[in-house]
Length: 133
Image (cartoon, rainbow, N blue to C red; front, side, top):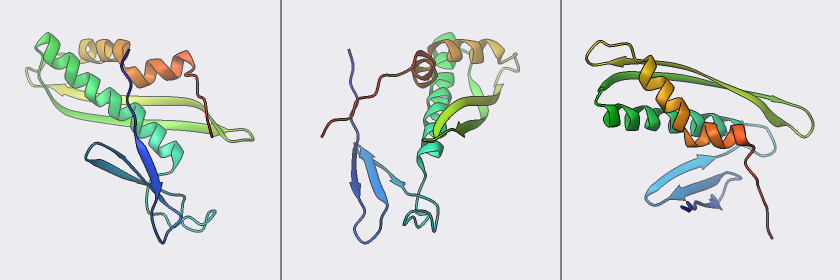
């Protein structure tokens, strides 16, 4: 089994948080005027969409290299639907466009990426979440 850990801390002088893994960082905040937010970074729903779409972008490249079909342009739009009280993500959809450098139909690459996408498959399976103090 493989495990990945990330760290988060508050950003001094703000109510935002900074998250990091290795040498990569990201700012997490609420929209300006919402619960002390200053709009300094992404909110949770946006991060969920970015995790889903980012993972899929990576998997398109993994599959492309594996099967020898080089890709050029990749364009993904992720929509995360929210509802209920407490607010939860109820659905997510991705629109995927990509071009192969050899002009072939990219659907095969997209379908293989869909089959192996870690975040998409985890969300579909109902990821278990635990919170400890």
